Image (cartoon, rainbow, N blue to C red; front, side):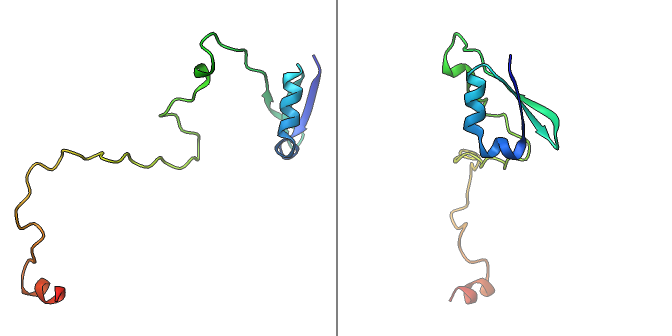
Length: 98
């Protein structure tokens, strides 16, 4: 098996070339300051098809932004509300609203 070492910056710039090498059967080693840190390898096809490679919804990459909360998350939690819930509270509120 042929081994190809590449620095991370070069791999970023030529990712498609690295993937072509992996598909051709080569072993691609990613290096940071010329020290090996990771390896690109071909994934063997699963019997279930593409669904086998889907990322779980609750899995989050380190440093990734938190997902937005779902709409309607608190639906049904307010059971009672006063008829005058948005009425001015007093003279100060009424004057400010004018």
